[in-house]
Image (tube, rainbow, N blue to C red; front, side, top):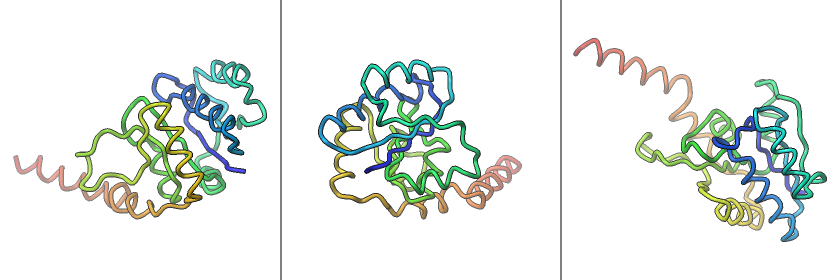
Length: 174
């Protein structure tokens, strides 16, 4: 059984839980044995639960209470794939945490010039992308990617602090 993890709060406009649930239905219909863990939190939670029922996914979706930050690594590490978010185009905290755990992380990242090297995420922009890329990972069984290096290099507190200090000194010299 493949464990998918979608820990973002339910805000369909910015996270697209509806699209990920529809992708899960297609995967199950294609014969993939997948379960999805979702957090029981957010303004569109009821809509997500209604959609789970409508798509007949009650046996494939588990809603868990909001997760303490210190417990998140356990969830990432027990998951095979992290469906992070779609709708904003940037890396959220879920993306960085999942990449720090070397998990395939699905997100609609669009800011290629924001970093010297693009983040090693699985880029998805629509339902077809989510389905195709998930099937590709499922079929290859590549559930552990080397992505932690990128988080350490570009998003660790040392890296961010160094950039902030550089910016601060640049502003002072102007």
